[in-house]
Picture (cartoon, rainbow, N blue to C red):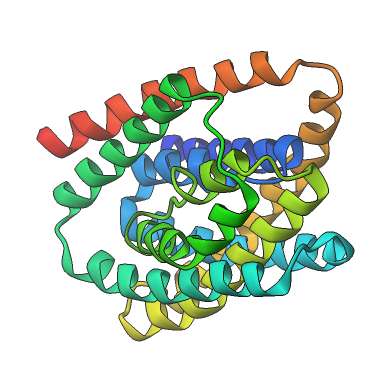
Length: 246
């Protein structure tokens, strides 16, 4: 592990915390791909599984009063947890090149969906009806690649939830996934004590950057911020794809 790797890892985690502070979600979208460049996909997913548990435990509790219908929230979160456990098996069994290429593909799909369907909308009744299957697919992506936002965040955003309900729902979803993903990764040997210790250290830049993201969100338009993040993700996805092919 070189000094450059450590700097890159700290930058990715801090940027993820910045994004979470600004939007209430999405830390793994930026953090996992950047961390994967420094440490590889399995280690990046292991570290962020612990970070997700920390940050979303707090947010789920802080926004508990804004939760919508519990049937919807429970179906979405429990299905996500089951998907994350299944995805963890893929993470432990696939090669590094396949994981790098798969993660790059997921990031590109996310970018493409954000650009192609910025105003896509799902009605409340339909959203509640498909919460289980959508949650499972999102959890599968989270377990295998550390990123569920192409499905989970896009789905909730398309339902046009109020910000407080969005944060409450996505926090419970992430919490449930992490709660089942962590023991799954530990049993498969992906999450070790050393990596758990790294996650504790990584919590410092994550939580340190979250207040900065909250302040920035009040000064920069959401449209501008989204464009900056998408541009960064393009660069990261290209780098991941190059790593998978070389």
